[in-house]
Image: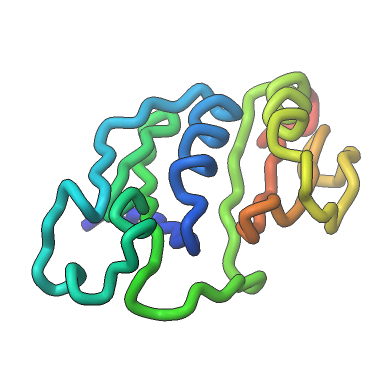
Length: 140
């Protein structure tokens, strides 16, 4: 059994997918639009501009797969109670990822050392996804 984090968006999945790919040196392994999927279950729900929305995408970060898509069947709502924590090897990796993702974000905990990490930042990005980016080791 594997748990695969799944992130949903309200039309901004493509932009988020490319930003996360850049921030975490990931690799997009699948990207299907609603128009390409031609899924009868969704076709009647789609507005013309939603045919380019992301039906299904997969992003590999390290050895972890994340599934991402745009919602068309329910109204997209932001949820702050769930979030992803990315464990980096170095403080510089934390800083680099945050630099790419910080525009339009809301910082919850400033970048700082904690008793369990030499560098940690927690924020909600411009897409409404909450992230914790940190080092796993306190000596790095």
